[in-house]
Image: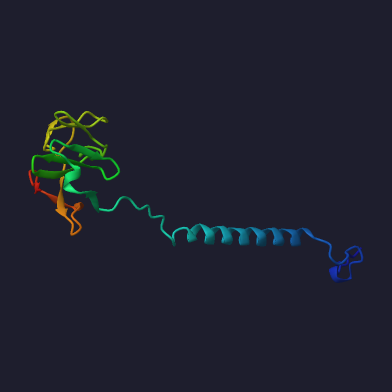
Length: 164
């Protein structure tokens, strides 16, 4: 008995348009490859446009000197700075704790960090707790329109006051 090879082209059992196992696997592989390529492209497109979050500007106006009567200690929470007026002198002290970046609160004796208990005196010097260094002071200037401006990009030595 000799077995003759079946000629698929002349196979009467196979009709045109019928899906074979091989064709199904080729089709599924193609869909998988195409899907992987699409997902890869779109996931990499995320990095083309950075997700920048813009914070508060480093230089901002806080008002006129008359807005701060003598004895004022005003915390500006969004800008993370405290404006202190003592007589004719004004200063801007950071309210960001130098330990882990919590916002310190003004107190009668200076500043207190609610997170880990750091304490600072009126000038921002560390008096207790884990803070490694004093609170920075920022440059305070008068703008041409007569308003005070704080420049957080410029730190000044502690005790540097703006004279009104």
